[in-house]
View (cartoon, rainbow, N blue to C red):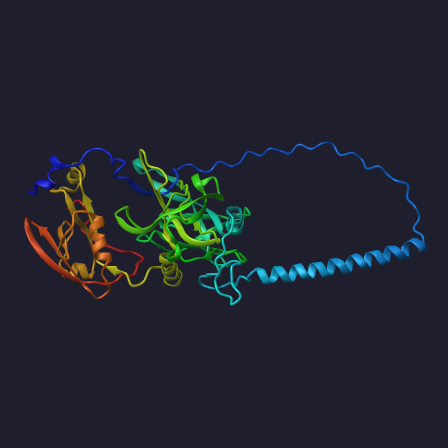
Length: 437
């Protein structure tokens, strides 16, 4: 038996400050937001108006009155026309029924191209406030003794089309039976799920609304370390529309969350549970990231993360157009990582490490010879011991390429080669041989 896999060498203790835990910014579960307590306004008793003696209106007095009214009407008409023309030229008309509106709010140059303009933080907050929403969810959970109860969650979202498409995080709506959206003006809607992707932690939902204000899409590739950014979201699931500011701390930061490796923007902007799915905006009021994670722990602060908008664009379009992300490979099996004694006993194995927990019925993986309970040693010639390492190796593959995996089964090593096909979600994905092995 490999000495590194024996129970005697299981690491103990929680991760230290040098080994932070990254996690999604979920608020506490089963805590419904408390409605505000209504406090009736205090009014003073109105005083009756003092009547003045009425004077009869003579013909002599009527003539200058009519002339004055005409002059005032002319001035107001000219001023109103000028202001209306100015506002019309400045405010972009938002089209409806389009897939994704990458509009730039008001920031365009003389040629109609996107123009960046540095705004003050209050101006950014005012510009984007109607583009960020509050999201609350309900999920039916089965507890001990088969008792069911409703678990409530909360997060944020960003409007991306005038007719009701919104982007948020996959982990915000995952497993939800009801999704509710509250706009900045207080209007509430039921939302339906259009598509969701766990690998990028993005989801698209839709509400039945029109004439919304979509966020202006910027370019995360143009961001600089140290550049000022603004986050808008719903921290704690109760404080919708909260604005915080900070800087871009790092670009293209690779972190692993729930065994999935992501490349994210790092910021010191205050990020709290409930901010997930909210927007990160540059000082031109353009959306440059979707907030999704933070790092918490002893002696850790100011470590927030966002999905770059350049990464999110293609995923959003695929989710709207297809309901899933196209071009992604499907290995046809699911991993499970066994790294403690109790889990090993539950799965009835005597080695710690990475296993194949299930294989989809009729899949290419099943035809290639993979079986539930295979102990994974190497993928593409590289040793793997964690689910994150294995997923990273597979995610780098394209449809039609081969994947070579060395597994151990019944004490013997076996090499299996699989030609990868495209992943397409099925209504019911059946897996063979569920644990225990």
